[in-house]
Amino acid sequence: MANEISKNPNRLETAGKHPDEGEAAGDTLWKERYINLLTDLESTKKRLARTSAQEIETQKETLLRDLLPVADGLDLALSHTSHEEDSRNILQGIELNRSILKKFFSKYDVIDMEALGQPFDPRLHEAIGMVRYPNIAPNTIVRVEKKGYLYGDKLLRPAQVLVASS
Image (cartoon, rainbow, N blue to C red; front, side, top):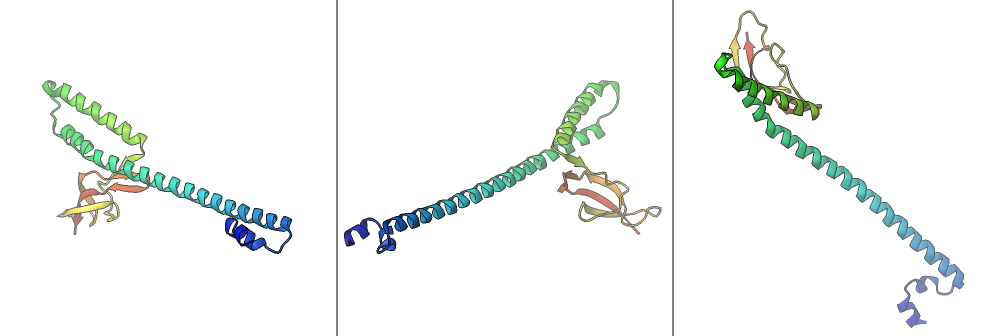
């Protein structure tokens, strides 16, 4: 009997019981183990799916943030290109590229914030200076140095602004 117990550890639990009772108890034990393992597997699948989705979202945010200087450069080029006939082709090329980038941002739910004339909000704006403007209410944005962008509900980059002081 000792040999049988060492070969079959479940036999120890069922020793002295009717053989059918021992098999039923063993089956129940294996079913419980199976259910526990299945539950653990499902939990792991859900956790991995959630983690993967978060990682993808973080990488997408990083990519979009890395594209913002391109938008800044195109906006700067548009503001400094003359509208004379000799530079008309260059201006059209820059406008076309900026339009393509706007469509890309729109596709991925990136919105540029309108900050000029708005009250200063430290959650959305980064003040890089204050300027005296007698006819404008204090804490009003009077100049935008760099546009701010939202990605869905998240702040991708705060707008860098000059704020009116009293």
